[in-house]
Amino acid sequence: MAAESHWAGKRVGVVGLGRSNLALIRHLLQRGAVVEGLDQKGREELGPIAAELEALGVKLSLGPGYLEELGRFEALALTPGMRKDLPQLVAARARGVEFTCEMQVFLQECPAPVVGITGTAGKTTTSTLVARVLSLAGRRVHLGGNIGTPLVDQLESIRSDDLVVLEMSSFQLELVTRSPNVAALLNLSPDHLDIHGSYRRYVEAKTRIFQFQRAGDEAVFNYDQEETRQLAVGAPAGLCYFSLERRLERGAFISGNRAVWAEEGRVTPLFEISQVGLPGRHNLANCLAAAAIATLLGIGSDPIARAVADFRGVPHRLEEVGEIGGVRFVNDSIATNPFRTLAALEALSGPVILLLGGYDKGVDFAQLARRAVNRARVILVFGQAAPKLAAAVERFLTPGTEAQLTRCRDLEEAFWQAWSRARPGDTILLSPACASYDAFRNFEERGERFRHLVRAIMQEGPR
Image (cartoon, rainbow, N blue to C red; front, side, top):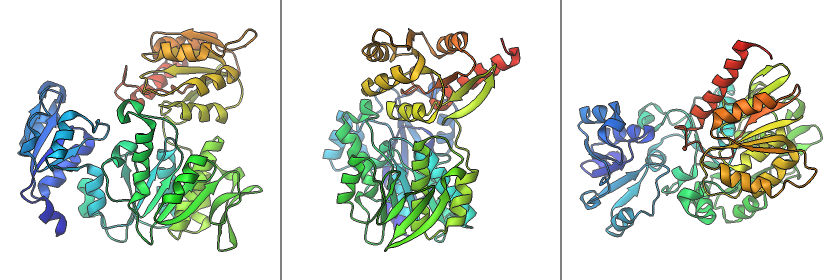
């Protein structure tokens, strides 16, 4: 097959030995490539990964000089989240080295139709919901990308009549030159500026999800956000939208108390709003996007309505961890940017004690700070971004403002501060608006720590 002839005998350097690239290495070896693994970590940091790769016959180049002498490769496969403007990479590209990534290889070789979903927020929820709808409709579905298990080394098990749903991050999209058959852009807000370097480059990465579509493909856009609506004008495929606010000629929108689909002058009911199992307007928008995607794939309203009613969300996304003495604990550790935290504040009712902080990705906190001061009773900032967050919040703390601001060392101190100041009826909300890398491996580990702290209180019992 063409994919085999492309990689057979080719010298490929796989840069960054994380989970997705391990799957890619296995796949490239099956295709006959001569693979070398490169990583800035040393052998001890990589642990069993190094031994596993060497057992597969993969040569390793590790440590500080791992990007030197890249001219020995015909192709480089880069890990998501790696800066693409490093001097060594720029020089390699100038010499004609082919650049690729796990997502590009998957899109090139996948035999089944692919749905790709991106956006600053809501990707995981919408992707998971789409997969649920398709499963309820009796389709064989593979869910992957930025969620779950990498699919590139599972290509042999994917059939042409299956469907693939990919959550696609900006990092995964940067190097692709192919787009999914159905592509959705949910929303845009500044994020990952520490890696992309500018908001413009972040948006450019996101738009690659539909940039290479062809006739017969479909692209789904958020009509309610002007920026995504304008980007739709340049899409080469069929267009549809989803909207909480406007009636659409083609797409999913709200009509009275239900969601409907409109196309060619006909309006079809999709689901009742009262039946939606997820909280918040942002999640209602995610449901509309999922319904639009499913409809484009020929799925009827019954499996859409059932999935929307039954779906209770994904861990670490407005996840209610427990209630103790009238105080509710909500884990929204997925909120790694202000856009997500703003959505969380809008989704919850009642007084809020807000935990903000972590690793600063170079975004502006002004809009969040303004809303947090008006919405939260107590704001606790922690971690590496605490000084910047505190400064943003202090700008809006005027005389008579109820909100109280406290700087904390870390998440644990912020949590115990929140619990000591909580009253019955309060919600203690972990929605950090920052990445977790200053103290945790990922947002999941941060969320698990929050859960652990809540369980510790539960074991003690109410105050």
